Image (cartoon, rainbow, N blue to C red; front, side):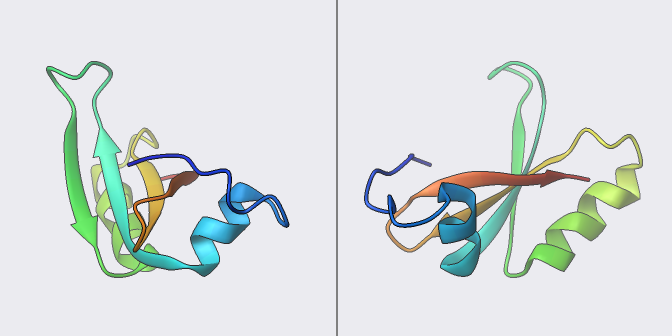
Length: 74
């Protein structure tokens, strides 16, 4: 996932959310323990995090170009 400079006309998070191709739920503090799950929709990613129940699942919107932004924790 990469950040972008092409969406200076709006908020980066808003741009990625509006143009999301998929969503990623990421967990883990360090690369060695980090896991990622991909979902087609934001509600699916949020449900995954909610099922764990600790509020520490980071949800990212990812565009077709690979731009990403943290949207929420679940």
